Amino acid sequence: MSEDPTTDAPMANEGDALHRPGGNRASRLTFLGTGDSLNGERAQASVALPLAGDETMLVDTSSGTVLLGRLAEAGISLESVRHLFLSHRHFDHVGGFAPLLATLASLPEASLLVHAAPDTLRALRNLLDLTLPGSEGWMGDRLGWHELVPGKPTEVGGVEVTPYALDHGLECVGFRVAQADAVAVFAVDTRPTREIVENAMGADLLVHDAYGPQSAPEQAHAMGHSTAADAGEAARAAGVRRLVLTHLRSSRFVDPQVLAAEAEAAFGGPVSAAGDLDTIEF
Ligand SMILES: [Zn+2]
Ligand SMILES: [Zn+2]
Image 1 (cartoon, rainbow, N blue to C red):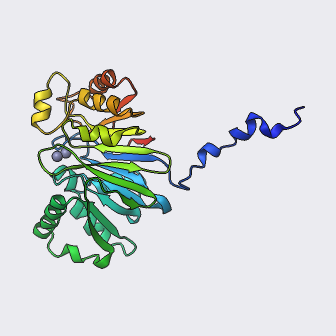
Image 2 (spheres, helix red, strand yellow):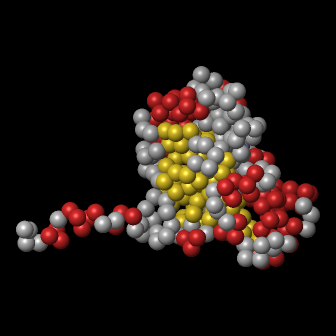
Image 3 (cartoon, rainbow, N blue to C red):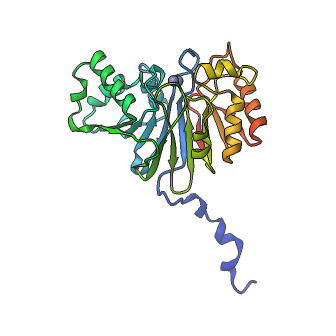
């Protein structure tokens, strides 16, 4: 029998790795929508991440009422949604905001802080005024607006979110989401840009736009998007651990598995194509 069994391996196997510094917060995200703006097979862009204290942050809102259904299917309560980060003002990213706001207004425990860069914030409030007049007042001081400045981090629920400029042809920001022990970076919607590589440096997960195959880069770039190989090259240059492709066109145009294979060849690391309601640990 060993004189000092506490130095042996079993002590290290008792689950400490599961008790991460973030308390009950796990490093994971759930894709609520993974399609592009014209894809009828998938919901449009939205991702949910858990925060400390059982709160949730969303990146983008998909469109219509689809977000509400996806949140329910993912088991995420509406009252838990406290922070919304918006990448840009295209309808497939902000179109679900009005139904979300109107629904939260009916829930006394709900509150929401909306984070977006200036043009996006202005466009969103104008859209709301046009399509749901008066709704900005429905939640009183339970609704807040926070103007993002690219490069300046914001702390929410134990998570540091840093917006950075993307190249999409209009104001559009990606997000570096840093937790105590893991970093996820979002690059949607965008052409290839150095900003992605700089902000994704050493990240655990890169979630990247993938419009089409590397055989048609002009088409992807003309639309303000990236090829799968562009995503793979960004992942390689940044040295991320894992790449997930999203914002996918319908299956008439692209095969997500082919895109993932192209990205993997460029990256040299693990790549998958996201699906609606996929949850990923990172
Ligand atoms: Zn867009
Ligand atoms: Zn989009």
